[in-house]
Picture 1 (spheres, rainbow, N blue to C red):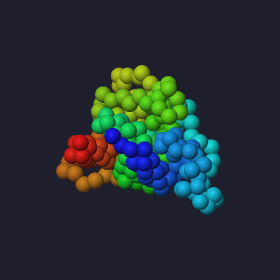
Picture 2 (picture 1 turned 90 degrees about the horizontal axis):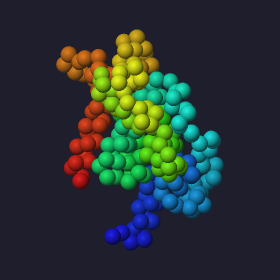
Picture 3 (picture 1 turned 135 degrees about the vertical axis):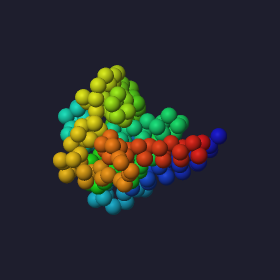
Amino acid sequence: MQSRVDRQIRALALAQQCAAHGARVRTISRITGMNPRDLLRLLFPERQSVPRGRAPDSPEWYHGANLLYRAEASIVMSIYRRLRTADFSGGEALLGAYRQYVGVCQPPHRISFDRAFDLAAHTDGLWLTESRSFSLVVCPACHSEFLAAFGSVALSNDQCPFCKLVQRYGTDPRVQSSFPARPLVNPSPIQLGMLTLLRASDHLSTRSRESG
């Protein structure tokens, strides 16, 4: 069993890593349970460096977001869900998922850490709310996971952002720069559009099994 000091040290380490990814004080406080005043004193001694601005509110935002934003949001939450299934805590899963997302997607990264936090909160009913607004569903065509309204079932690929990205891949430079193709032997269109996500997810699953 962890001692109180051990828990505080672990919480501070998690707080530092969240702050390094641009998280707001409120977000860090919710994830770690640390007092906002202590976080300001320890992490932001120069107050001008404190992240500011309106906190994201994802339930309405996601459904009106453009295709690339919805795809990247789905990538973050797909990795987050895998880590949660592997028994990582909410905060550790969110941090790990965000790191993987930043590493696998090309900049500029459209999903901020605070946005990812809000998406996770409304997917799990955690931190901010007890109700769930999102769930991950599996596309019946490309078998990728994507965010949808809670309780949704994907009966076709009409709502799958990844299938739509594949359809646009050959003609849309923004999609090509955001999801660059990797060398493959006779790659299919689905492989071109989904390779980045699949490699990240497979690598993450392997690491989880090895560390378990």
